[in-house]
Structures are given as structure tokens and as C-alpha cells.
Length: 316
Image (cartoon, rainbow, N blue to C red; front, side):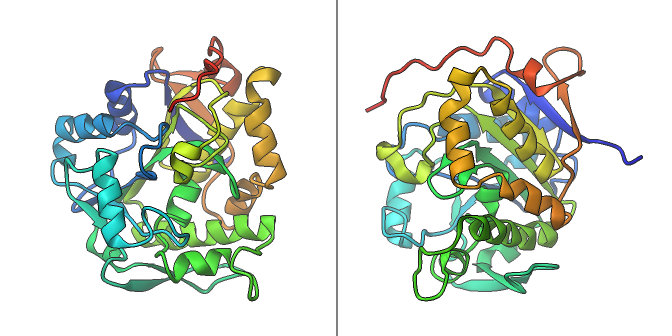
């Protein structure tokens, strides 16, 4: 019987908690390191706090020279051009270290092995400049994807803004007409191109905090947060870490999970998980290791025991 994938878990939502999670999965993060973040539209209230990442990079010798990486957006907004993107990065506090907008100087085609929609995916050309990828994700809902975990962070976030993202979203002549399940599959195939490129030199950390049903791409227009904070999950297996986050949401009380599960189901977001499995991108058979309590094995239900309902306050 194959060994289960390991997902590490801490309830410590702080820079220290982020470091504890990263330290469990960083064994293959070497050389020139890219940190893939969703840095968000201007003044979005729910993004991973920039100071968490600043403190993590200062505390981890291996991240001293790491670079935050992003790509421009397909939609028109505050990150659709490199010039606007850099202004938004500064507004949101991402100016404490180098930020590489990977499609600033063009694109590169990475092969999609075993895909049914793509044979290659267009990514920001600077992705070729890095040896390792640390995928640091704010887990939350998403208006089209249902939820945004590590898969969405890479699949949309490494595809370049003008070609790759259009490939993912377009069906026929309607640039936003792609079917729901087709979109999940295309996101996953795009992700596969990136994770195949980095091989073992990749790790995933998902932060389950301030989980609106809206993505951070909606900025200040994001829907109010109604889902309780959970903690930080980390793994070397992208499917396992995203599945564990989804399972933690489903393990919540009905009133706590209702908004986020409705968003995931109405957008067919769970197809991300089943298609990643079909593509051989990881395992949905995992165990959660509670690093707050002596590395005990716990269930998603135990991970969310005692979570407190999120205050019904809209951040302005």
C-alpha cells in the first residue's frame, strides 16, 4: 500500500506559525528561489500580510535572497500592466524585497504532459530563472474557480497575463465563456506545466485565514468574511494540501461552512481536486500532522475543533 501524503498543520496564524509550517516542507527548496504569492489588488483586506512574509524571509537564511514572483492579470485592473502592477505592489506592502513580474519581458511555453486541453502552457518567461518554487497561498473562495488554493495560485498565477490566462479562460470567441468544469481542468493543466518544470524543488503552504468567498483579485470589493479562521497547512503534495483545506472547510459546523461550500459547489470547484488526481499531480490520501501537539495525527474535524465564528464586520 502506498504511503499517505503528509500535510503539516498549525493553528498559529502568525509569522512564527508560517515559519513552523515552511520548515517542515523546505528540504528541496534550494538555489535561486521564487516565492509565488497572490499579492492582491490595491488595499485588499484579506491577503496574507506582507509583514508575515518579510519576517519569514528575514528568519530563514535560505530565503535571504529569494524573490516574490507574480504575473500581470488578463482582466483590466490595477495589475494588468507592469507599471500599474508595481504601483499596486507598493500600496499592498510588497516593496521590502525584489518582486519579479515574470511576464514583464515575454513568455515561455512549458509542456503540459497528459493534458486534454493543452500540450503547452504560456508562462512568464522569467520562470526559467529559478531553481525552486515556494508556493505560498491564501486559501479562500473564488468567483469563478470556487476556491483558490495552491492549484489556482500556480495555474492562474504563473500563466502570463496576455496569452496563458487567455488560453485558460477562453472558449470560442467568448473570452469568459469557458464551462465551469472545463475551467477547473484548464487551471490544473496549467499548474501541471509549472510543477513538472520544478520537479521535487517545490513546496506548498496554504494559509486558511480571512477566507472570503471572493478572491484577493477583488480587492476592497471582496465579500465579507464569514468563514472561521483555521490555521496554516503545508505539504510537498499539491493535491493533498488543497484537499486537506477543502476537507477542513467541510468539517466545520453548517453555519460556519455554508457560504464557502456553496461557492465551491456552485462553481464546480471540487473538479480541481478530482482532475489533479487524474493527471497524477498528487494524492488525495493524506494524513494531517499537528505540529502544535507533538506531531499527532489528526482529522480535519479535529483541526477545526474550537474555531470561532468570524466577526461579521466588513473591513473598509
